[in-house]
Amino acid sequence: AQRVTQPEKLLSVFKGAPVELKCNYSYSGSPELFWYVQYSRQRLQLLLRHISRESIKGFTADLNKGETSFHLKKPFAQEEDSAMYYCALIRAGGTSYGKLTFGQGTILTVHP
Amino acid sequence: ETGVTQSPTHLIKTRGQQVTLRCSSQSGHNTVSWYQQALGQGPQFIFQYYREEENGRGNFPPRFSGLQFPNYSSELNVNALELDDSALYLCASSWDRAAPQHFGDGTRLSIL
Figure 1 (spheres, each protein chain N blue to C red):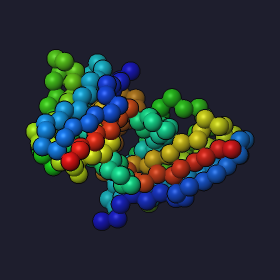
Figure 2 (cartoon, chains in turn purple, brown):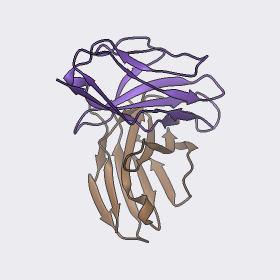
Figure 3 (cartoon, rainbow over the protein chains, first blue to last red):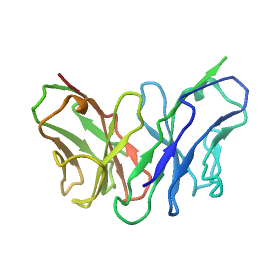
Figure 4 (cartoon, rainbow over the protein chains, first blue to last red):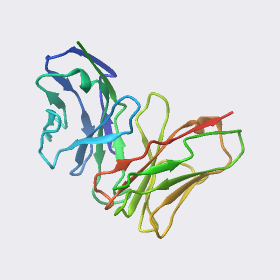
């Protein structure tokens, strides 16, 4: 079975500092990885997906199959980045095709 | 483009009762997935519907059931409610089974 682990429940940084939210996964096949974000009083929304290899709001994430990780990084954090971040994995095939497996989430707080 | 809408926003039930939650998918989407999110946890996959057929199920008992209609809207039904069913229920739609999922605001269900 697949699993997603976000080891940090809370992460605090100061504005302008680099930030890295950790995500590790276990899955025997070829996963597709996502980062979702939930800002205060807003719905869960897609931040980025690994196959797009794009940068959204200054965030990037690289899939490291050797370390089974998909860490989210931003070189200079902004106060508006404060939110709950979820790493998620989808299996593309077999039973439960299309099932998103989420980590427990990391609350990022960026202080002024 | 109309996003995913869920109703009702809040619901209070007692143990043993039955509940129906509703979801309208985003325009152009044919797939709906349902998730349960307990307090402090990431969303847990309940099941997914693709073109009116169930396309995978998570570790939830049979008293959790669903439907998808020809217009791709969906219902989640829960029978014989238990205290542990208290959670936020999220609906997500996508244009295909493993495509990025777009979430609604959720229905907060409280069981007394």
